[in-house]
Length: 384
Ligand SMILES: O=C(O)C(=O)Cc1ccccc1
Image 1 (cartoon, rainbow, N blue to C red):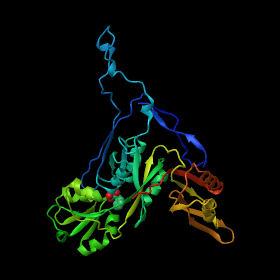
Image 2: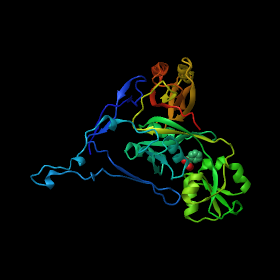
Image 3: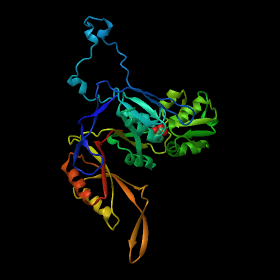
Image 4: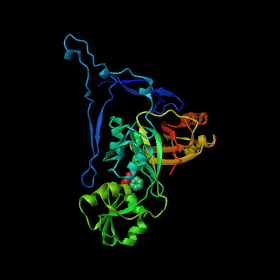
């Protein structure tokens, strides 16, 4: 099935021009949307997902003049209808028909985040973060929802690295207050548990309750995998820290609710898509960028000043070593040769790219940054 490029307004993702707009998008040339069959399955702890893609077969009953030789086809109702403006309207905000990939099994907090952003979406469970990126790139999903930072354990570095390696755009963010529950098989009491399984972050965030119980902790890929493992293996001595939704899906009982040490354990997720969204100024937007700088005193200070000078608030700064160029050799004739780590800087700031202040700040940064890419400009999530 051929795909052709058409105009959809957005930025170039090369970051070569902070204010330069490019046209980029994809439309299906024969009007038949490519059909993807996405099935979420799982087995054991690893949570295997099955994502299958198949070209759409035209299964609808179609008129065919060859069926009735020599006669005109009278079955006009089944003829394809011309496209109208209604065919081009954007998907409703509740996410009807939108497919969202995420890492984990059904019932995981990442799936909760996807459902918070798009309540009626179809979720596409994936084994790994990278699979969730690829599912969007391969048109098996429309968007991916991935955790990027947590209020108690900090940044999820893997996803910062994947954001750079892949070419998806950040089109939204979701803040989720995770409510950790202690789950076990029906009929099992908390004092019968010898071990508790969960995602490392959920176990660390529930330290007080788990210490009181005196149980061993076992890390698994995601909270829902823990619930699924306890349930499918009929483990009577093991519990899981997971969501109330996971309890329902896997048929477990909730022994204790809200077992997190901090009452508010917030995880911030990013929504990624193949195309950027058009930035606006009528509501609060955030912009995420990544850049590199030359070595030298005060270079980071200078980079941050481009925002401070324009009264643009920064909400996040993260640095990651450049994997492909980990060490920079600086030859100083007086002091010999020094080797430094080379860093990528990720910054989120509170301004829309439609705001001239943001355009000027990035134009300014581009004058001395050795690399600059806009990862996305998206509405801020102010809800919890
Ligand atoms: O394991 C899950 O359910 C996830 O989605 C990852 C996670 C774990 C704990 C808090 C938020 C997200």
